[in-house]
Image (cartoon, one colour):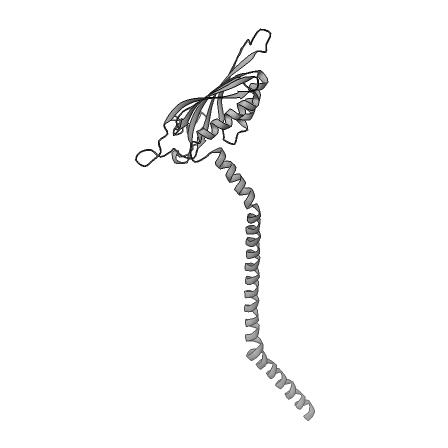
Length: 239
């Protein structure tokens, strides 16, 4: 009996020691361990996010030459200034390489883009659907330079010139194109005359007024060889 009582007292003492150990040592450390695990999970998530951002930045850095090339192409297509002299040189070079007989270029001073007629933007039909999308604000629409080109030459020469015009670095939008044919010399090929109405664009109108640059024009004429004939270019250069 005495041994059994001693055994029970020992067991009770052990339980008390375990309870005290749990309350005094394990429970606080377990809470601290849980908080540390939470902080570890948060740190791992932040690390993953930073690694994702770093990968994205590295990808952007690798793509920077491509983006820069695209930006330069866009600047050449829609420059900040009229750059009519360069366009005339490029067009005259296209005419020379295509072998057309005659080319005239008549650009107009840069102007603001045409404002859509009242009632067209956002107009609704009988079904209530919008007929046309809303126009961009005037401040975000590029300025326009209208161009009239007259080209005379053989069929394939005129076609080659139009293809070269379309391939110029400067963006040229052809609005109208009319063709007329005429007999050449006796027994010679038929000549075509193409009348082209087109537009070019620039990011904004040149500044005018005191201290600004006005878009005045003057007309000149140059001649360069083009195959068997010659190419006469009439230009209006911006000053």
